[in-house]
Amino acid sequence: MTRDDLIQKLLRIEALHSGATTSGERDAAASARQRILDRLHRTAEEDPAIDARFRIHDFWSRRLFTALCRRYGLWPYRLPRQHQQTLNVRVPRRFLDHTLWPEYQELSSELTRYLSEVTERVIAEAIHEDASEAPEVHELPPPA
Image (spheres, rainbow, N blue to C red):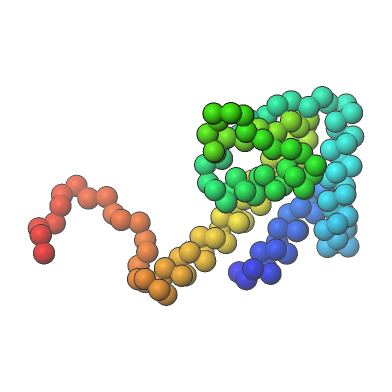
């Protein structure tokens, strides 16, 4: 997958979560974003915001979640003495459950798959072709 392929796939995921119904809408990322923002504003009127806390250990996934929150006008934050992997955001529960979190999970999955492919390719080309995990052994082999 190329970088451009990844970007197009991420935009299609956003369009899917916006509730787009036609192929023209799915291709219009700006339209998809606006539909999600409209849903957030409607939901906020009916469903008061909660303070949601997340623990996202992976650096890249945390950056993605933070950017996604900001994209929809939400403000991710950490309180004093909270760990780096902890993020808080004030968001309507329904928007969180039906839009923000499912979209994040799909985007994170695609981004993780892409980063994993790139990492494995670079390691294989620059370091060693076998970058697989070390096997679990019950007995150590004799010293070489």
